[in-house]
Length: 67
Image (cartoon, rainbow, N blue to C red; front, side, top):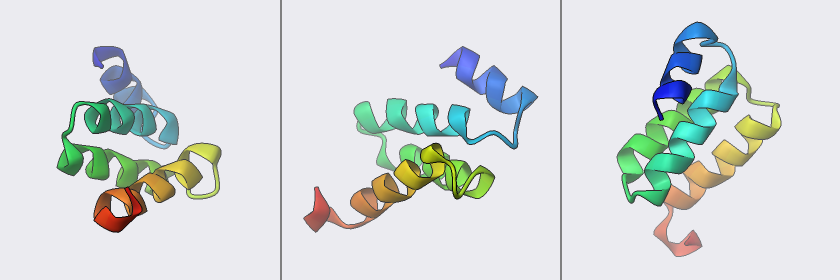
């Protein structure tokens, strides 16, 4: 987690660190924090594989019927 936070500070335009931080939060059950990280991943790289998967995960977090 600390390494990902450092990476996001060093390269804020890269979606990868935000995506993986979101995955950590999601696995821990911290949906709000996960959603925030996924939103940043989408904003940083909407067409990247990180951004595309983050968008799908956001939809699932926001729509309980998709879980």
